[in-house]
Amino acid sequence: MPSQFRPAANPSPFRRIAASMWNAPSDPSIYGFVDVDVTDTLAFIEDYRAATGKKLTMTHIVARAVAQAFGDNPELNAKVRFGGRIEERESVDVVISVSRDGGRDLSAARVNGAEQLDLDGLVDAVQKQVDRTRKGQDEDYENSRDLMSRLPFFCVRPLLRLTDFLTNELHLHLPKWGMPRDPMGTAIVTNVGMFGIDTAFAPLVPMGRSPMLLLVTAVKDRPVVVDGEVVARPVLRLCATFDHRIIDGAAAGRLSKVLTERVAHPGAVVALEEAA
Picture 1 (cartoon, rainbow, N blue to C red):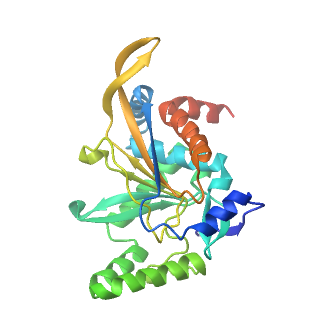
Picture 2: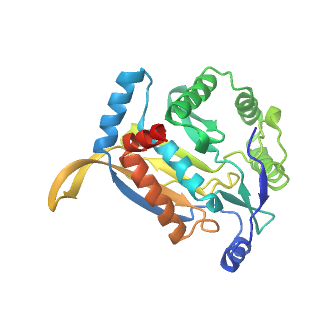
């Protein structure tokens, strides 16, 4: 089931003002990117695939790092309701965009409670959702897709606004109608690197209420300073769009630190978890 919610405990005066000052984002908010040297990451992915036979990708690594970053900063795993009330999610629910029909359509693999999964668990959970979606076995998605396909164009926007009100303001859970509660969860992770894009930003989804949307771009050789020398290293540029009502510069910095460390050195993270 999607996450439950509780009122945020003692939000700061600025956070209360920010939540009330702006409406829900309907166009891009604030942006930031970080370059990550993924030399160790690429080697880890290759070794993991050889050892397990599972198709680990950079998207899995990034999605798990996102879940851990929000798990370490639960006050940022929040949304704004009723025009100014900040509420925190009780679990980190990550949505990974999935291409369908040869790139003509887009669906999503949602992993609830992603902060509690180890890497194997996340890979399996994502693959299960992707298989169901691409085989047309995700009834909730199929119901939503069929409804949107049949509606006249002038009915789509009113329906989306109604969906936003029902699932985000009233927190109704209506999956049979293609309207799950909190539809986009904590963060949306989208891989655009498969299209050869190495730098890009995406707008926040108005009805999503997610505090962050992260694009995983193509790994590209870039100049990096190592031991005082400039060398070429494979670099992943993570491009984020934030809801400034929830995430300001300082908060983005905290998320960035966790993301960078855990994307750059996934093997070390896994080793520490296994040792614990």
